[in-house]
Length: 255
Image 1 (cartoon, rainbow, N blue to C red):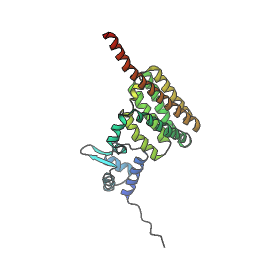
Image 2: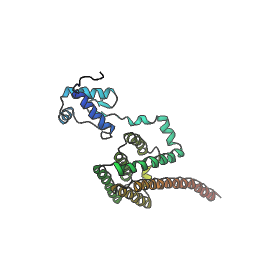
Image 3: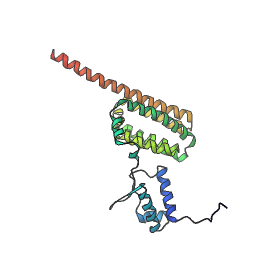
Image 4: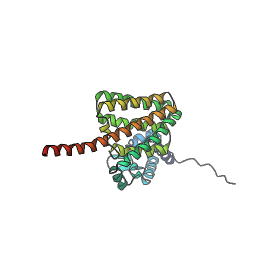
């Protein structure tokens, strides 16, 4: 008969599965420090030996990393999504920027649609809380803060869609975006009219999500990223035109 006696799960295995789940769901993020051994054992109600066994297993599998005298951290596994040579290639070819935006439009439109259907009330409160921070940053006219919150806003929608694979894939890609590999987000927030438009687009996305309207949420995300695509295209054209304008001016002054 294909049945075996039920054995009680080892405490260390329960610890391991819980931490794995938190990493998988994106609650524990790369680079995040875990609580101290004492605090963690008390929170999880397990002995320190059981906890150490689980942490050692997770470190051996590359999910956690230990820093001497600093504690245990979630390993930075996102960097493995793209080889360094490919990242450098992305950064030096304009077509990668527009392919990236097109990919985001497809993926994030789907994520917004899913989030409007599947997000919990708490998920939507997180999205709204980040949008409210965007409004504050907008009033302070801090482009760097606005760019950072913009990324957080979009990632919160992906988290609210509850698709684990999409979450980790897009979080990896957003790390490259934050580093300016695809385009400089801060530059987009320096123009007043662009900043105002971007805020209103995010307001529309947030409103559709809060109303749990899947088609409207998807449409709002797609419209926003189409605007980003057009704005970047105009910026690139302007920069190319400026190069020729300077040459024309130099030629005229030398005549």
